[in-house]
Length: 175
Image 1 (cartoon, rainbow, N blue to C red):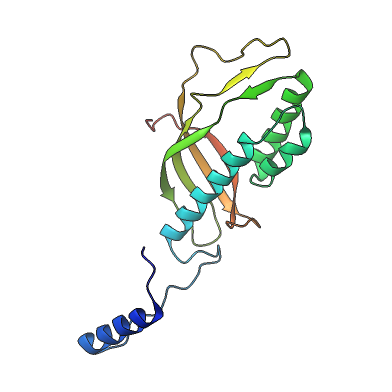
Image 2 (cartoon, rainbow, N blue to C red):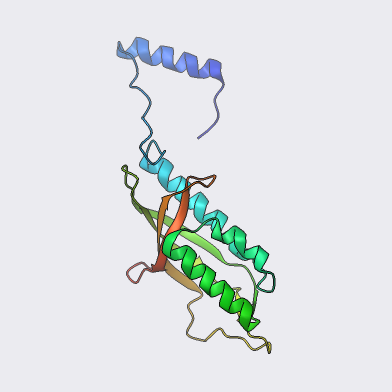
């Protein structure tokens, strides 16, 4: 969407009114989730996932304080699983190198009554390695570098209005 000057917007509205002979439709009313449309909700969900990936990439397993930013973007089951995973990786002395990325974010479902918003995406861990305390890689040859995920978002008090409630492998989604 390209930004418009207020004057151009007023002229466009005036032109539409004179051509149509009626007033324009009212703006969409935000739903209980705070999003006025499905498009807006999916954009917020993608922004949430982007923030989550950025926080995850900033984790230093030897410094548990760096885990906190990831926890801000996860609730419920996802938050509990992340806390357990990072605690165990820290205790075991593991190290993660490389950056996780994602692409092909596709909205699947959106609820106007405060329920979950669901999306599919491809997680790219091509450049990620996990090594144990002895420096031995724990990444198996069977690991897919691009992994299909289904992610459920719930309304939360984050800057995007969402947090990740659950994520898992999406067997029927191709990356």
